[in-house]
Structure formats: structure tokens, C-alpha cells
Length: 123
Image 1 (tube, rainbow, N blue to C red):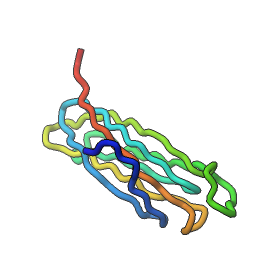
Image 2: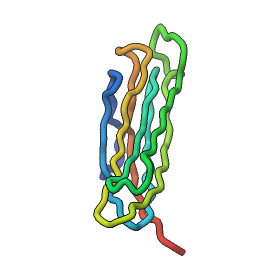
Image 3: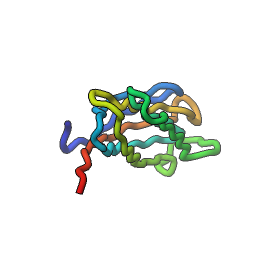
């Protein structure tokens, strides 16, 4: 957990990234993941450890064309919302966020800014 953060994880180099897990069982959960990048495209995958749902993959490409300098207009941000439930207790959702494409290895970046998990209640 964190509060009042003004930083994020970031990296460059295609294929580099991070992974984290969230609990999964028969409860419905909603995971929000704040991401971003600059002069790049990135890939998010989410997979349940019990294989009870297909792996989710999303590839984001925010800016095409050639860039001479890093400029703010090439930066992008987004929020993924993953709603999930496993078929059995004691499982995990594994999320990976990797740099998939970049203008060049010195300018492209992918960022993991934050994640928040909420258990949904039935009404």
C-alpha cells in the first residue's frame, strides 16, 4: 500500500517489465491498474493460476511515426479494469506489464503507476 506517491515504476528495453499477483478465489474482484508510457507500446496480460478463464492480453500502442526528441505529446496513460473470479479457493491472478515496442531503446518507456484491488459485494 502507498499514499501520496508521486513516482512510478518505469523501464525501457523491449521485453522488460514487471509482474505482480492478486488473490483469487470464488469471490468476484475488480483490479484497476494505472499504466502509461512514452514513445512506446506495451502489453498487459492477466492469467488465473487455476486456468478457469482464458488468459487476457491487451497490446497498447500510443504513438507511431519517427520522433527526434522526447516530447510530452508522446506520453500516454491509461487504466485497465480487470474483473475476475477463480473456480476454486486459494488461487492467484498474475498480471504482467511489459514494454512491447519502442521508437528506439533510449526513448521508449513503459510505466506501472498504481494498482487497486476491490472485492465486489452481491446486492
